[in-house]
Amino acid sequence: MSNKKLILGVAAGVAALAVVSLLVAKKKKSKRAQLSEAAQDAKDNFKSKLNELQRKAKREFNNTLEDGEKLANKAKDRANEWVNKATS
Image (tube, rainbow, N blue to C red; front, side, top):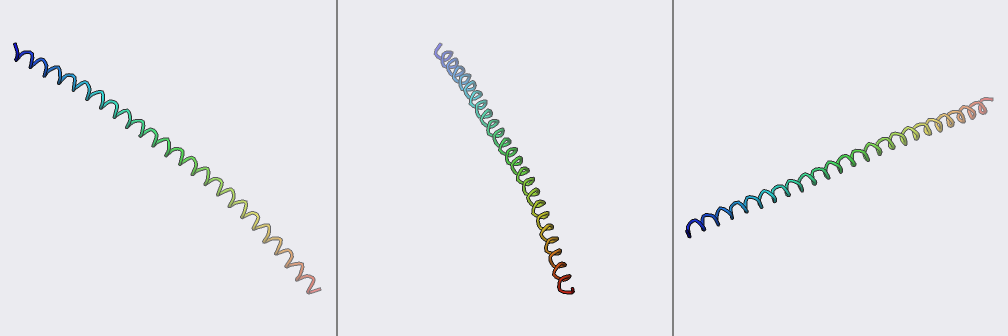
């Protein structure tokens, strides 16, 4: 009878250990999934911010380019006025 109790005790211990290991593995998998999801969210957020910054930079570049063209035309007009005054 002692051997049967020992075998039953060992079997019960192994079964309990198996259940605990499954629960721990599931918990680890859940944490891994959470970390993966958080990393994906951070990546998406970074991409969004980068795209927004790129759009703003293009807009500022175009505005600056337009301002530069206006200033160049204004300088050209003044230079033409000076040339006309000097030749008159």
